[in-house]
Length: 205
Image (cartoon, rainbow, N blue to C red; front, side):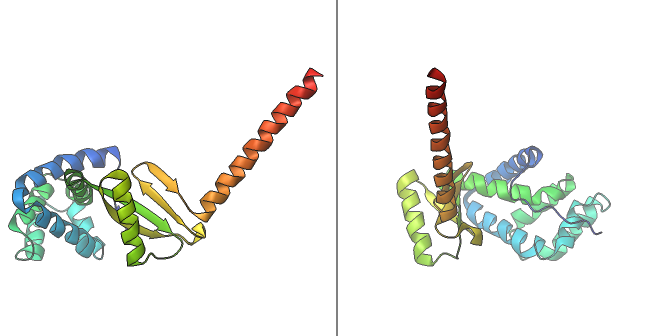
C-alpha cells in the first residue's frame, strides 16, 4: 500500500512547535508583503500538494537529498511564486522539515489572523449556506465577539436543520439534532430528579 501524506486539520504538539518556529520566521521575513506571501503559500498547499501527493511525499522523504529537493522546488516554482517564499521552502527542506510545510502554512495563517483580529469559525449545516446566510452569520459573530469571522463551511445532513458553530474549542449547537438532544437530557434530568425526591420521601415514611 502506498504511503499517503498526512493532511493537517488539527496539529499535534510536534506540528505546532515546528509550525510556530518556521511560521514566525516566515512572517518576519515577509514584512509588508506578508499577506501576498501567505496567499501564495496557501495556493501551493491546496493547488499543488493536495492534487499531487507524490510531490509532498518527495519533499518529506529522507531518501531524497536536500539538493535534489531544492532543485525540484526550483523547477516547479521558479517564476511562479515570490523568490522569498521559494527560498523559504528550500531552507525548510534543507533542515529536514519538508514534511512540515502544511503545519507551517496552517500556523502562519493562524498567527496572521490573530494579528488582524480575525477568528476562524467552522459552520456546520444540513444544507449549503447561501451567500446571504453566510454574510448574516459573519455579521452576527462580529457583533458578538468583536472580530472578523473567517467562515469555514461544512455540510452535515445528519443535523436535520439549523447550524452548529465551532469557535476554537467551543461548540454552539443550534441544530435540530442538538436541540432534541438537549430536550432529551432535560427530560432525563427531570425524571432522575423526580425519582430521587420520591425515593427520599418514600424512605422517610
